[in-house]
Amino acid sequence: MNSNQRDYGTVAGPHPRTAKAGFEMLRAGGNAVDAAVAAAFAEGVVEPSHNGIAGYGGCVLIYRKKTQDVVAIDYNTAAPAAASADMFTIEEADVPAGYRVPGRVNVHGPLSIGVPGVVAGLCLALEEFGTMSLADVLRPAIHSARYGYAPNSANRGGIAGNAERWKQEFPETARVFLKNGRTPQKGETLTNPELAQTLETVAEGGAPAFYEGKIAETIANHVQELGGCLTAEDLENYRPFITEPYEIFYRGYSVYTSPLGAGGLTTLQMLRLIEDYDMAAMSVAERFHLFAEAMKVCWPERLRRFGDPGFVDIDISEELSDSFTAALCEKLKAGLASPQPGEVVYHEPMNCTSHISTADAEGNMVSLTQTHGGGFGSMVTVPGTGLLFGHGVGRFDPRPGLANSIGSGKRPLHNMAPFLALRDGLPFATYGIPGGRTIPNNQLNLSVSLMDLQVSIQDALDAPRLHTDGAEPIQVESRAGAATLKALQQLGHEVTESGGIGGPGHGIVLWADGKHHAGGTDSRGEGKVIGG
Figure 1 (cartoon, rainbow, N blue to C red):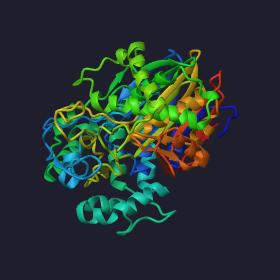
Figure 2 (figure 1 turned 135 degrees about the vertical axis):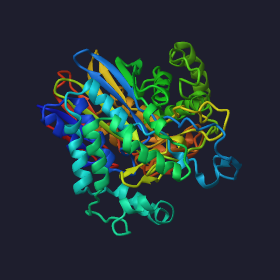
Figure 3 (figure 1 turned 90 degrees about the vertical axis):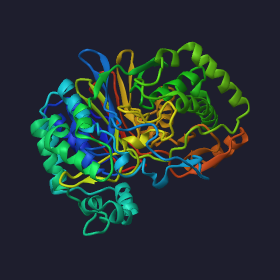
Figure 4 (figure 1 turned 180 degrees about the horizontal axis):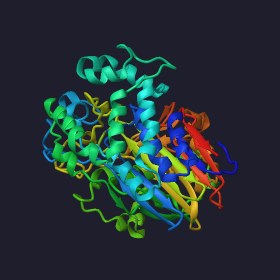
């Protein structure tokens, strides 16, 4: 953490190259959006397990100091036009989900690929809210792709764990991410010259150069040759969009997150549930008891009823209303008095995502999260492009008849949940975290740490975490301490001790003048904060 006077601003991200790319834009006179877009493109090169240029999508929140408002950009994937609710075979199975898709072809391979939203979303953010050229912000990403980057331990581990499978099933992915057929060692660099060329084409022609013409045809032809249903028309018709974020007022703060299909609505509902409790007066075990029961109330609501708002009737004002919160509070009180086993409505083990926070000296802030989905997404790399594709279709429930079932052109429910907070109308914090379903829960923990407990962003990121998506046992990090785990058991919980819950988070807190920043990067990862 650093809290010195800032002349340019601050960037916090999961890889040193990511943070450096963003800060280069601030030093060159760019704003927080320029920094975030440059960082996100660079992140798409240097952390291929977590996200990529052809990652399925993401979401971003932007606080504009000049107009004193927050806008959201949604660049979630869309299912191909030919996708349908019954496109996968469902078999009963003795696994946590209770069913399986044979070969997991909904998660890996050509049928798992939806329209990738990353390029379109980042280009839209830059065009509407940035100040620099696309060529300038792409320069660090192109440099890393052409001249090499050192994968961090998480990405090396992911490559090692998949290397033999890639050689058999995804040879182009093996060619791009292995060094002479083996996993890169610590300190060794990987290059992706074909990705550098693809990015140079985008730098010259913008998003249309990716979604139309030669690149789009190459993508669509290869995916269809493999048996997928993504077409050139799907790519050409894709659009990210600018929208209003969801907002609540909590402890004197205006708290914003991205709209559905993102995961932040569940965090906002949990914050509303706990707002009558004095967090600062509680022990860690008492807070975790409260959090766990709030999670057990809200996750079944999410997994049963939430989906693409264009396909599912969801009234957000009602979801965050006093009356609905009161109804959920009755369930919360019952759970606090006597914790029950709960239930997992839909089992989903996947998580691999990246978060970036930026703030400039003018007081603008950005909170950006984007992803492949699970590690290395679809695992399909398109020859001649260097593009590894996310698995957007894999984010749907493969069973028909549900809120998040697959549909032509539908956008899936996902867990990304970037957050921004204002205090007395002034910029306060940008923060976020990867980790699949742990994201909405960890954002609850971070929000309470920052706004209730008033700790630093670094201490908030380093604090112990817990997780449940509806059922016991609850997972609790070892760093919470043996006494806390024992106290939770005495309160009626079944507890599973965990070495780490969720991926490395990142954030920035702004002081009242908007020019003093404190950046934090999670001790669980290998991220970087750069400011000056």
